[in-house]
Amino acid sequence: MKVAKFGGTSLSSAEQIRKVCRIITADDRRRLVVVSAPGKRFKNDSKVTDLLICCARQFLSTGKAEPELQAVIDRYSEIANDLALSKQVIDEIIADLHGRLQKDTGYPERFLDGLKAAGEDNSARLVAAYLQGTGYDAHYIHPMEAGMIVSDEPGNAQVLPESYGKLSELRKRAGLLIFPGFFGYSEGGEIVTFSRGGSDITGSILAAAVHADLYENFTDVDSVFAVNPSLIAQPKEIKELTYREMRELSYAGFSVFHEEALLPAFRVGIPVCIKNTNNPDAPGTMIVADRQPTSQLVAGVAADKGFCSIYLSKYLMNREIGFGRKLLQIMEEEQLSFEHTPSGIDHISVVLREDQLDPDKEARVLTRIQEQLKVDELSVVHNLALVMIVGEGMRSSVGTIARATAALAKEHINIEMINQGSSEVSIMFGVQAVDADKAVIALYREFFETV
Ligand code: ASP
Image (tube, rainbow, N blue to C red):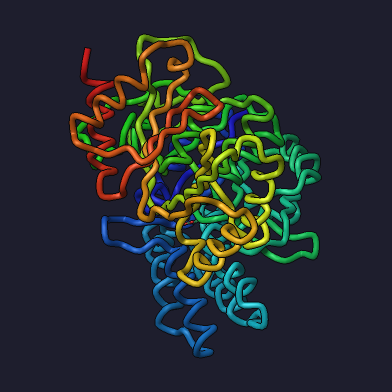
């Protein structure tokens, strides 16, 4: 059995949905299908999820959202008409959307999640209806009835372990099962969504639950590329990646697969294949537990912006027992999640996502560090980007950092920080955000274009 997930661009129009249905029905192992909400049809188009968020926000602030709701209805109507579905299908979608707007607005985040989930939910109903209309035994699967139970954190749900047992029973169901991505239900029966792009997570959970042979993730590119294609024309396509490599690349900005989606598949060792709905015969990128070493040292180069680093130095820090704990305790008490802590004998930096700090909070954190840890030096570097080179091959090779730093030096890029993560499959460079693209290009050229 395969689990196939289709992303937003694959569901964006009737034409795309026909392609999706051809792909589903071309392989009878594709029995459990996860769908996203209709995404963008062209560059400046809106995703239905964004239209729904707009609608919910407008309703929350003014008690009305007619034009916003109409924009969503129009997207579904157009698709339903082009697919020649019965009027009943679109009437049900309209009734569903109105119903969601009638829910209690007292807990805005919950209300918002109710609307956000409508994108995938109605997409699944529509695809199931289309498949039925073309003669297939297809069924919309209700996530609550199927057992997708998640933590009650609106916009950031985590699947609860008990979900897997119940969801595994989907394996026994006959026909094509069309499951809406992106949300589940709390134990109290409320809709709760995963973080944005979370239909990938649904697919991975289902693949793990039914012990699928393969989790196919259909998107709109032929494969994962070794670098962002907007920076390098025709970059190298990646044929195979390990879960570890994909994890690091997703972390550092590869958006083709959701960062949180690897874990469920990885835990039970289900291979993931990233494929293209618009070119399903292309082999795509396989994500697997282990891969044969190749001559390609680095698998990919990525960068993500929006970081800052709090730098502290104190003479004899290395001998001061409890220093690290006290520092991280301040982070915890200030509700700051930190990303990395590169350190030396007398200094340590804490790298954070910058959007967690505002000027007041930053001042308070610095004062606390100064007062409680009595440091000699304390400063914050803003606007950092983390640039990563990722590859299993680096573990057993010599001179990778030297090549990388030389490539950056040639471009006059100042490295603010280096961290060769304990994982050894990645090396991270902190650079000023303005240098990030230049750094990625320089590293790509060094490891992919230099022989
Ligand atoms: N539709 C949701 C979003 O745009 C989830 C997804 O597409 O995976 O975030």
